[in-house]
Length: 507
Image (cartoon, rainbow, N blue to C red; front, side, top):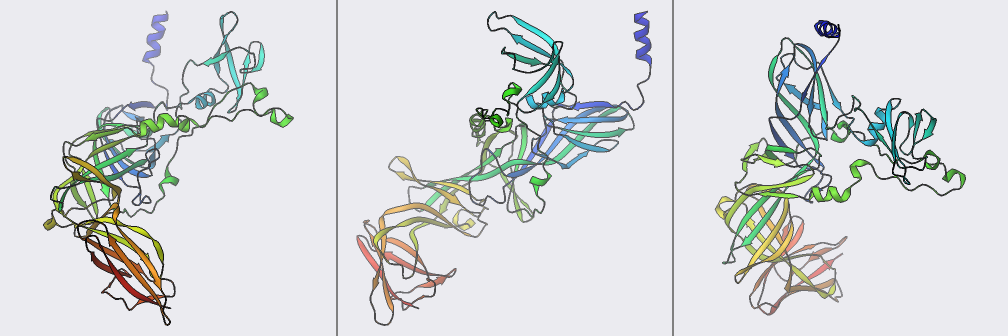
C-alpha cells in the first residue's frame, strides 16, 4: 500500500504556482574590465578598500525547464550593483531580478531561525558529559539569546556550562555566496547560453614604471606593470582582463546604488550581562567585536597584499573614444582580496636629458643652502624612442654603478599623452644647492640667488620663481622667461663653481 501511495503522489501534477529553481554555480568564462578610482589622482591604490569599479561579463550555460523559473547566479562579485545587471540569452527574457543580499553569517543564521527549533548542546566541565536537547529561539539580539526548552525559558550561556547551538538546515533566504536571482518564463525546456553583465565596486588599477638608465647616461629603458586590485571576496579564475585609462564621464553615485550584504555582528553572552550591568552601576560589558567584514584585518591585509606577477606578454593598447583601453593578451586569475600585476608596456632606448630644478618665491631670503632636485626629462614622441600613452602611477628609477644597478629614486608620475613632455623627479642632489640673500637698497629691495656645484662636471639647472603677494620681480641681471605664470631661470653651474642671479622686488 505504501508503494502504491508513493507512486500515486509522484504522478500527481505539481501544485499550481510552484516555481522551479535553477542554480548556476559558476560562469564558464568571464571578462573583467577595470576602471580607476576617479578621485585617487596620482596616489597609490588602497589595497584593502579599492574605490574604483569594474564591468564584469560572464558566460554561463543553463538548463531551463518549461514555464516560470527562478535562476540563481551564484558567485557574483560582492560589490555588484544589482540595478546595472543585464541578462541576455534567456528565451523568455527576464521578468524580475533580485540581489540576494543576505549572506550566511552567525548573526544571519540566528535571525533566520528565530521561532524555529534548534539543538542545544551542553558539556559538563566536571564530567565531560555531553547532553543535547531541542530548543526554540524565542528572541535574539547581537549580544543575548533567549531559548525555550522543555524545562522552560532561559538565556543562552546562563547555565554556567559550555553551550553551543546546531542547526538541521539553513534558512531558505540565506546564500553562502553572493547571488543574483532572476525570474524568467521559458516557452520550452532546453539549454541556453546566457550572458550576465554588471558593474561592481571594489576594484582599482594603476601603473608602476621601472626605468633603468643606460650605461651611456643619455638613454633609458622603461617598463611598466599594470597592477589590478580586487577588494571583493569573490575571485575570477582564468578571466579576460582589461583596464581603461582616462577620466570616465560618470554622473551616478555607485555607493548609493550598491546593495551591501548586511553584516551584523554576534557576540552572545548571558542576557543578565548583555547591556544591563552598566545601567545598575556594574562593570560595563566588553566592547563587541567588529562586524565580520572587518573582524580579521590582519588576514585581509595579508590577502589584499598578495601580488601575482605575469610578464610573459605585453598588454595591447587600444583606443576607446577619448579613453585608452589596455587588453591583457591571455587569461589570468583575479584572486579575491588580492592584487595582480601583468606587463603593461616596454619602451627601450628612450633619449632623455637630466638637469637640476628648484622652485622658490621672489623675495624669500634663506641663508641655509637648499638642495636642488635631480630631474629627468624626455619627449613622449616616437622620435625620442617613446610615443605611447603613459597612465599615471608610481615610478622606480635605477642607475648603473659599475656592474650593479642601484636605486636612484622612487616617486609618482601623472598621466601623459603622446607628444607631451615627461618630467621625472629623481630625488635631491647632494652636490648642487642654492641660497637667496637680501641686499639693502634705497629704492627697491634687492635679492641675490646663488647656485653652487660641488661636482667635477658642470650641471644644468632650471629655477622657477613665483612673484610674492603684492610684489613683482624686476630688473634681473640675467635672462629669465615666463612659463606657466612663473619666472624661469635656466643656468649652467660650472664645475666646483657658482652662478648668481640678481634682481629687485617692486612692491
